[in-house]
Length: 297
Length: 335
Image (cartoon, rainbow over all chains, first blue to last red; front, side):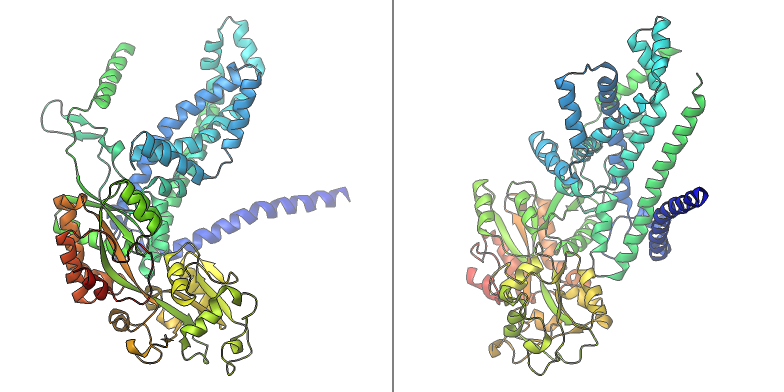
């Protein structure tokens, strides 16, 4: 009898696991069947066009990459810093409690609200216009609560004995955190951050709200250009202030067009977006694996 | 070793923070607004950029007609795409910010009324019948085909239409029910017209409406219904929407003009001026290609004249959608 219960439970668990995978495979197979024929180097390196057969995803692809990298640059230090402060330094008082409640709430705020905030704060009040920078800052706000929470979770998994051992050997708090606690928590922090990034890469609503474009046939200015004269390289921040579009907006636009060709294009763009997300997630798994192996106490 | 790395880092940081060369400003035309007008503007922008050999860039957004006007009236865009004329509140907003605009019609969009191809009883519908089906009081009452015409079958009627946020819905209710935004609520609504096509093509009892372009791309799956507006002066009897009947104004009242609004101050910049001229001159070919219906040639000439003269304001006197007007007539009044 006890044996039977266990077997039923295992079967149910397996079914639960397979259900998710099954639906994901159906989705992927469907999209690949619709869009695979359209995937080509040309598709990746052409600008959008009114002719479905000629249209490509260069500007949304590059826009998504810009937004992703900047969002990571902004949100990682701030999010991890806030997480460390709350977990390691902050005392248990009303102020900390208030911050904690707020962060937990912010994680549940619908993304379009962040878009409205971004429109009011970055686009209008700070006059950054509808630029790559506004988009990245808006998404930074969106993912910050997730990063802070996963940083705290990761710090909590570091056994307290490690900290005590470090103090016992005469290390200061700073030394303990930077040399012991943080490296041990890093795999968890990185995983959380990258998962937050893969959420951000699929966001459309906040970016449409702040005024990301739909048709754009040029790229943000490249930050580094090589020139013929000394010092042979030029750096430019102009790209931060250039207008942009991202993959989900392009997909959304193509899906709603009447011509069949655009439907195929949308499917192909979805494949690219999926690959983008899968790459990010594999990076998370790889980093976790690598850092975990290094950890020896 | 450590010091070396630090110095390299400093140089990199400095060169990123202080760009050596000020970037040459791009010549940019900023367009935003209706997603209905988007395909036309996208096509024109593509050809215009090709013609200018990359010297001028055009960006197009889809904030919707209302969202587009909000940005336009703050001076954030040069041109605004609109699937309806500017509304009084938007006129007021523009006036407050000192934005003067030139209103230019660029194309017609027909609204197609369709049924499933298996439907062998509907031969045509009158505007009165459509009103009887769609008006708010029909909710829960008009549910069978034989309530519309007694000889039609005693079967349920399934309604499909665009979501209430769309300009197509606004125009349809204004034209059929007589009041913008007033309709029954018990119909299958979707913001994505492709979903409506799917619905009507698989449901033998369906009746739906959406943009003409979506019918054209799915002819084999849908049956188009001719519409009789009961007014013989613009074509006798029921009329099918075709590029011709929409263009010559006989498919009434379900064809509507689409517009661009140009900021008068921005129109002084050569790139904006060239873009608008290109739009009105070369646009009519592209309009057909992306599934809309060009205006009569005369209307483009009048619009171009209006632009060159810099006549500001709306021929609709800021009243919003008007039904059954011919665009040339309106433009002529202003001359």
